[in-house]
Amino acid sequence: MKVTYKILRFDPEKDKKPYFKDYDVEVEPTDRILDGLNIIKWYQDSTLSYRRSCAHGICGSDAMEINGVNKLACKVLIQNVGSHITIKPIRGLRVIKDLIVDMEPFFEKYRSIKPYLINDDSLPTHERLQSVEDREIFDDTTKCILCASCTSSCPSFWWNSMYLGPSALVQAHRFIFDSRDHGADERLEIVNDLNGIWRCRTIFNCVDACPREIKITKAIEELKRALLHKHL
Amino acid sequence: MWKKTTFSVGGRAKPAGGFEMYSWYFMRISGVVLLLMALGHLFIMHVYFNVDEMVNWDGVGAAEFVKQRFEGIGWRAYDFILLTLALFHGLNGIKWLVDDYVHSKCWRLFLVSAIYTLAFIFYVVGSIFLFSYNA
Amino acid sequence: MHLDLTHLGKKVLDEKLPDITDFVRTYLGIDPSVNPVPIQPTAHYTMGGIPTDVDGRVIMDEKNTPLPGLYAAGECATVSVHGANRLGTNSLVDLVVFGRRSGKHAALYVKNTDFIPLPKKPEDGIQATISDLYSGTGTESVAKIRLELQNDMMDNASVYRNQKMLINAKNKLLELKKRYKNIALGDKSKQFNMELFEALELGFLLELASVLVESAVNRTESRGAHYREDFSKRDDTNWLKHTLAYKAGDKIDFRYKPVVITKYLPKERKY
Ligand SMILES: Cc1cc2nc3c(=O)[nH]c(=O)nc-3n(C[C@H](O)[C@H](O)[C@H](O)COP(=O)(O)OP(=O)(O)OC[C@H]3O[C@@H](n4cnc5c(N)ncnc54)[C@H](O)[C@@H]3O)c2cc1C
Ligand code: SF4
Ligand code: FES
Image (tube, rainbow over all chains, first blue to last red):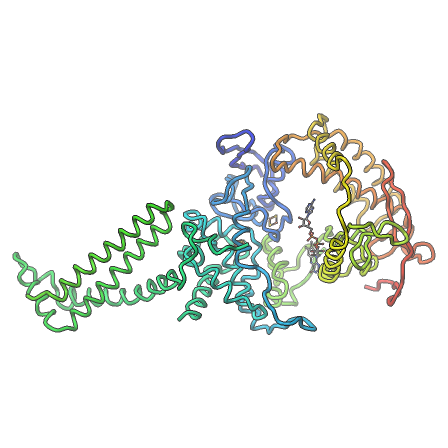
């Protein structure tokens, strides 16, 4: 089938402002949006730039705004979008080139919640075991692939880029509720900030955007409740 | 590396004591209480005793009704709590809006001060009226 | 060909194989708990390539001489724990065990080593490669050559191989390498030039494909993941040895390193 990609282009070496460019592409209905982008890049216009790697929703590198909604280009089939496909870079982060945005502020926030095991106990002789029930508590938030779909769809983040954003909070949840980790207090205080968890306005855009179907707002509410329990 | 100042307004370290947490908690609790109290107010004023019907051309009926209500301390307390919660819930909501939309340090300082000043004035005027009303 | 998972039931599939189940639902529109899933071969793992010792030090020759300061661990490294075929789920050994060992050893090495003087212009080589790519005015495109490379390797050098196929592949590679010299970039920008990156990558892919194909031509036996239709048996007398490939101009030199057998003997695969 023939589809039209309308892509927001921007080359920092040439353009003052981003502009839309149209491409007609011959694809299968079961192709991914990413397949169409590849066809354009490889056979029509090799200057088109975007990030992609795994092509099956695992690496989190190709989040973009597809017909107004944040999605991974590799996880959406063309038949589910239709023949007019408008693509823009994700919002709230500086555009470097075409669909490539500067992810550094996003990863800086990720690093700020200390996304690694904190446990000063003496080294165990075997694995740190965990019951099925204990693992269940944070199972959902282990699924995050750091694609930034959520954070860049969050109005609170658009309004104020200092906000930690849903993704960093999901990652904080992943460690705070892990029974093997001892850094919960430390991390709870990091998110206990005007620009931390309290900037979440429960808008739910993140939940709609997440390609891993993580119940992000639920995780954030659990963090809020954990903070209340800790302080009240 | 996370630095304490990285994510705080205007580069200041975040205030100790977690004001934002209490503010959020206050919004939740006051929201629920306000809903119940507002429904109570609505029921009493407009369903059980229909104030609108009492109003005649000079408003005497309604004034008479309020006078009766305020004879005991109970209703004054009810209205005082309603005033307190509604005022601070509303103004805290506006402060959130300022937090979200106003990025300039000066404007933010000005608006937040204005909100607190307004809150103070309304609170004092409302309280004086409630407790000194002597019809 | 289909894979039938329906006997596992929805609950087990969702809990134990959530990703695979999701792929099948997303890309094929099939519920694997209800219908069988069509399958096909794909390249899912690179079985090492850079020979190392157990501390991740890259070795240069048959005598296991380490190349000072160069380490490799993970999917790119051959520590030789897996034999001639890495079995499912076992690659974590390379990351968790040998990644850790390499890191520790590298840290120790750095502590006890001083900087050596750099050659005059160390960046010259790669800069020349890049500027050649930028200034190329040929008629070939990166994407077209890569597609032909992929098809050729899939058809002639994948799961089942024989002499004829491999020679075909070898000849095709010669042709592709020649055409690669004649590519032109459509994107001349300096920032995030993904086409330049793909072009560089393609050059390396062509070299690696040659190593793979030529060593497969040489190895007249079947072992692990290398299956020759014309030599379907393992031949320990002649081929119980590792292949080492050296770049010699446009050609590849092959040398061989003996296999050290410790606890486990090589065995025929019976499944
Ligand atoms: C679909 C799939 C399923 C798998 N399932 C399993 C399983 O269940 N169990 C199991 O044990 N193994 C599994 N594996 C294999 C295992 O996941 C990999 O072998 C392992 O993750 C490889 O880790 P690595 O660190 O060696 O390499 P990678 O994780 O590939 O890391 C290489 C890194 O190098 C970076 N890089 C590349 N080029 C450059 C450059 N020029 N400059 C700087 N950086 C560069 C890349 O961006 C990447 O981050 C699976 C593999 C796949 C593809
Ligand atoms: S929570 Fe979901 S949307 Fe957000 S970064 Fe993780 S995977 Fe992406
Ligand atoms: S390319 Fe990896 S998630 Fe889409």
